[in-house]
Length: 304
Image 1 (cartoon, rainbow, N blue to C red):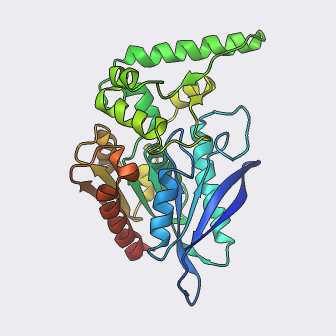
Image 2: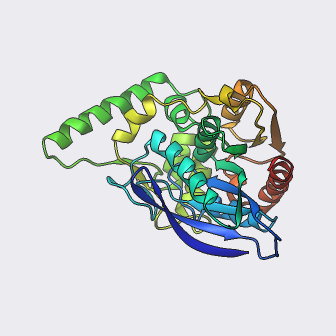
């Protein structure tokens, strides 16, 4: 497998990506998979891990940083624009169609966490995507509105919207605005705020296990009102007869979003459970990632 740094355009912004190409002679163009990262993540983390492992299974894969984040362009830094995240995935497909290693009519998408929600939205509205899969899927809009486990008091998100509107006013007055920090500084804070799920996210992003210096540790406040009017699952019926595979851990508190997406998909679909895995276990732990990759490789091998 060979990894090459690449760049491509997404609605006027330059995105940075890593292209993984299998070493074995192919005898012709190969099927390809675009891999979308979690909210706040970067291509060097779990998206890159899955891209590398799937490339080792014979696929050309592309992991990239979303606009406004990582090594990709866009200002302000730390903007989470769901509509642009969907455009980024479509731009990645466009980029792959021009690569000589790729068979343009055999392209799929894989999204992890928030990347899963965005991949479902992008695939549903882009018939060039022949198959779509998710790992620990999350619609980031649902996550912010309802919490990771779906039980959050609606008042919490209304408070975030109030804070976002105040931030807009402060910026208009030339005042300095503190952004919304994503991960607490200590494990105790993370656990107090989000229980075991919060603590696991803290461990992945704040320790040597998964931390990367370019990860998005904050979102600027306009991200919140953009998320307020977004729904990653609205277009799912447009997948029609294109297949979808959703992977979720049996211990994942976020699994309700995979279940909801599964129910809304009207064509060929499978909800596959990884026994014993939590949401974040599927980011990097071999005992869970390896069977997930095996299932993904079989799925894409069949449908691309």
